[in-house]
Length: 168
Image (cartoon, rainbow, N blue to C red):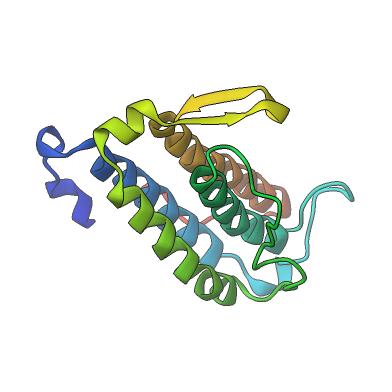
């Protein structure tokens, strides 16, 4: 049994619930990713799709980009440079370790937000036609990761590889 079964949701504030969701999604993603045999990391269903390791790195880098967009209220900024730019690909564990300080910074930012911040700050991305309240935007970050977990499960099914049990 996981630690989440004793949470009293009625007494949690919005940022705590958002972090709970982000952490639960990430816990399941890591369970999924670490169950993939390394020999399949470079597999992709077609030449236009991400490989397995590219998708893992994409999830980590996307969270960093989302964090930057939140800090800038809708843009990456003129001088944006991703820590993943020209990094190359490694193992899933190496990717997890590389991303950890960025993840910690992101979660600390979420923890620092007030209810007012979640409901009043808007993330506006005109190039995508997006205008979202910050609370909504944060939930979409977890959804993005969840979509890629579903894709990864489909990759593994296609490969005939045993899929880790993420529904615990």
